[in-house]
Length: 180
Image (cartoon, rainbow, N blue to C red):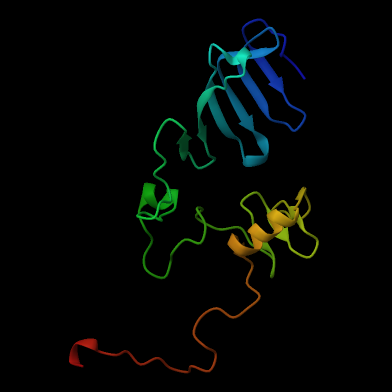
């Protein structure tokens, strides 16, 4: 790809489509630059490289997710901690009314086929052990045993079971707890 030999700057495109734009010299990254990750809807990692990068020291930077949530190893991560489980969008715009809670950090969650799982970069078919894009056509990756187990235990599932009041419940009578 282009630009890696550029003196003091340019763009390098990795085989997977990730791009690095920034300072470069002698076939290495120096100074500052930005990685752009196309498979994550253009999330970015803005990095400043150590003066000793050639000695194996890494750069330090800030990862910006597609919804503008920032992560930096230098700052304490305060998102989705035990004392505050809100999604990023809820932190920015407030909670929705009761009964309209978010299932994902998006205004309208993508559709998930029945029995499949939302992996945030696509949908997972547990029978094929394949993650597809939300269009259900684009191959994203195969899942190994470890990822399969994690997805099944943690990810949002396309509903193939009844959710709500038990089907046999015909009427719900409100109870006044103050009078008891």
